[in-house]
Length: 137
Length: 493
Figure 1 (cartoon, rainbow over the protein chains, first blue to last red):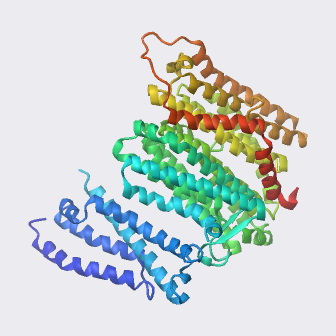
Figure 2: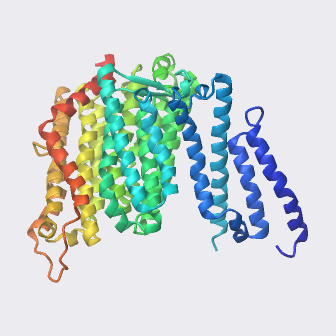
Figure 3: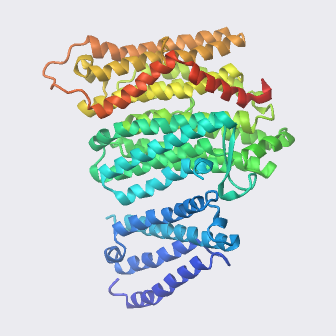
């Protein structure tokens, strides 16, 4: 891709807004359309775009395999851990109402946390899948 | 706090321990961790069973969302029994797994094995515990996807095609199941099993519900490898790593039989569709044909793992036969055979795993003189094999006894005769191995081999001992099975 300056420059322009938009979708999920899954896919698409334009090995430097592996697991653990926190605070599993003293705020916090877990796992899963396929010769 | 949340912890702890295994990575730490978790799951299952025996069915609402809308975990005697089977086999296989897995799976993939093992166990436990027809599908997929990975970890390259074939068939099965659930949802507007029971009678005469029952039966039959939908099973069991074969053979198909029981007698418990549509007759015919043809095919297998896999398909015939009687005795036979078959097939596959560990082969021609080369392992094979045949004082006899009683109760003496005749085929395929192992000399120049390590022998003998113990003291398991069967049939008896 070295001989295609337009693609290189424009993709560099795009990557930052894509990441920002992913975070917007992530944290706006409880008010409007969006949520962890969509945000995760959009977030991963920034890395995938970078890997397409600048090569998988360069992208791997930012997102090495050990990091995606840990992020993959952490996302699930955030989700399940939120559920277990509800149990520890005296509610049923995933009963966010007990997380804060006010049930409505508790529900909001709970859904934010698990959506964050979903986003983490989905984005790292997307990145892992793409890197693995693209890395094959 | 803990005791009231046991149903959730039963699933969540194994589920969350799977990603933790990925983070831990070191094979020794991961093994110890997985062992701890499987023991915890077993403890959980026992505690739940005690609770069910004391207070009757338990209902648990995930996230405190009320039952028909939210997901409900509902545990009665039948699920509690299934939870015990799955988690007990899961915990007993773990000590066996350490050395066997270290030998059969490349070192850098061992942590993946334990991750997938825990996920598979989570899925199977989840299928058993849930009271929601859609949630059941989710767990069906969790257990299936992880078992595809487990099977593909086998050393032989054919493990990959076997796993792929299982993936295609398993996905078909799951899709059929979900189509059936979708049709029921369309007619009743609910996915909760207890709620479906009340709403199905109103729409039971429609073709849609009949189609739903047909789709679910076909889908689940694919999963449980009912003849003639068993084609994925023999290779999957034969080429998977030994530990995976032990675990899947002892649990996966059993849980699918449980799903059949649940669908026929709980969800469709309020309507007579199961009988009116002649489904019971169809299942009985398939079960009988499967018992004979698959036992006969098992006789001609050279690979012993494949032989036992075909024997498993035949044994599934016995379980489905029990269902097709639609009587307390028949269902008792089925439910008790779930447990008994898990014990004896687990022990048999563990014995083969020990032989693979030392010789690397399960071909019948390499078994010559094995009775002298690995006496402790072969002794377990003989005892578990006798149980497979149905010799008195073993669990195999108890299951067949109840099946024969159920057949005689309905004056179907010819079915009772067929059950006994098919046992003779089991004599042939088990005796074939015993003959080669004990009455052929050790081949000249064969390298001396040691007995399998103690960590593999103990779990194997635990299962073998169980096969004898519960064969002699059968009242404990029979009482639970009979109570579960009575509960399932409810007022239909």
